[in-house]
Length: 470
Image 1 (cartoon, rainbow, N blue to C red):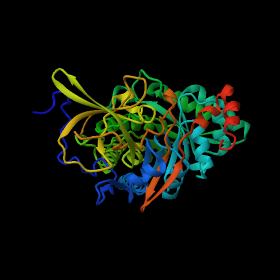
Image 2 (cartoon, helix red, strand yellow):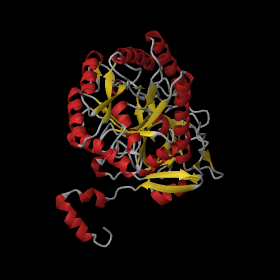
Image 3 (cartoon, helix red, strand yellow):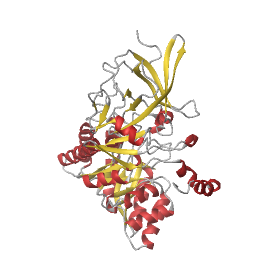
Image 4 (cartoon, rainbow, N blue to C red):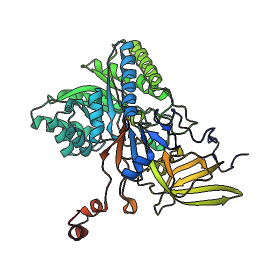
């Protein structure tokens, strides 16, 4: 009989030493001595060189997933007589190396702040391949985007039309824009991740769009590209995308009566597997069914299929990343006659906030060795002074898990680094890319000097005491 504290969806792994490709990077494997190897690099080499916690990105996995996603949407669009633009959603994982990978693969990049825009530009990608999002863009951000020549700015409120037009006019430019439409579609996802319902901060109600499009068209400094929708995140069911597409195409057809509408952007939010019980559709299934829904709606309204755009992020970066931790204290806690093993690690909600934010589920495995011991229900917790500091709420590890063991958590390539923070003054971990047996640092880990650098009272004192190394 299983542990009654385990949730219904959680089953003991058939092989606790295996790394199934549905969750882990596809070239994850055990070496002859039993340790995990990612991208041809053993975890012992990674931890000895970079320490823990450590974000590890399998570059080949990232590239392969990006190519697969791009091909899926492009092929689906061609099948219905159109073309597709694919924007990598930079908010999930952004670094100079990541932008370079995306650039080399021919994808565009979507950014959502001045900082993300600055990083993308500094990384050398053509500004015309950048899209700028955000529900509260500052005048500075808008001016910077117009000046750089970004390919699209997504309008999220009426006032942004005036702001973008003014910035473009001052620079004697014509800025392409999209309107983010709140379709009212509620995707099958966590309440906090649903971003297209009426009562929330993103987008413009369908009924308000025609008047705002007319306002855009009145400006000689704005070019209307089309409609944009994003219905949520970590979505497994395609029905929400199909319904959003149906509503958007109807609106798209109405707008064609008064001018061109060359594109239709259906956003992202395509789910991935985090635990073995997850059954996320292949990206090709999403692409095919969304394309069919668009084509059917276009036929219904007697219009041509526009250029389609999509913004995947998690489906590219998520499964390509893992996080390594070192085990610290271990406690067996008796709860109503059943035991849950609390395994503390040297990271926590400062490097993976998603469990605390969304009650996200993750998979954890022993990475430094194999074990034939029986499995124990565990909760992997961090070192922060916070009861909600949980990284893996429910999973199984060998009962002989020990202080000093290396653990690995799957599918952390999306949002974990992006949401990292300095709670309790922990330093944020480094990010390492692995490929063909080599590890390369792509984002260095923070030091205490970094933390003190912004503290005015401490900066000079710390710098003076450490002048030889600071």
